[in-house]
Image (tube, rainbow, N blue to C red; front, side, top):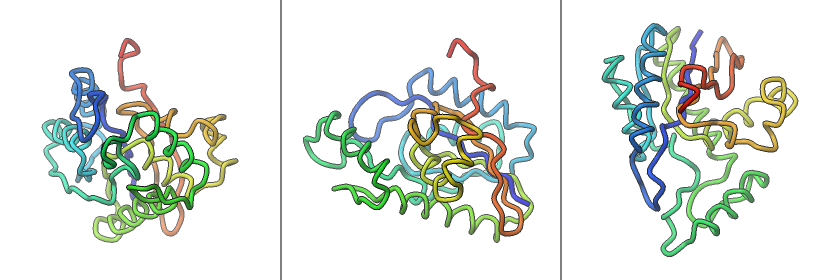
Length: 201
């Protein structure tokens, strides 16, 4: 049995391109590391964007288990990939891709492909590191894309009533979604938990 802790990166600097974490984002990552300390994590996997790499590196300072960076854990679209694209234009295309899962953005991959890429990563981990606990530092969209590939909307609503409608808005910075893989079956333990973060954050 493998337990995957799917963690969205900490709060990022609000700017185009590949920004890193804000000071709050760094604190969120530190609190997440403290929560994971007793979870017997043996490896961290991370997206290769700056915000996820920085989150993973902060967590690894506490866990000291090493990080494997994988492009397949990157968000399906990133603001700044298209020159001169406004945030409004980016968000419009993002929302469209949320609900038209086969749609391929101008710069990026479809929601279905994003979920498949993440699935491929965890499937490979389950084979190479069986019976282990793994932290995966990724993005809100990737978490949602993966869950929507694995579970029906009705199954997801049992955890978050408005999940299919709000999607990645429910996956807050440094939230933890816990996914268990046993045999050929996946089981959700929790979606987007932020109990390990201070309410004031």
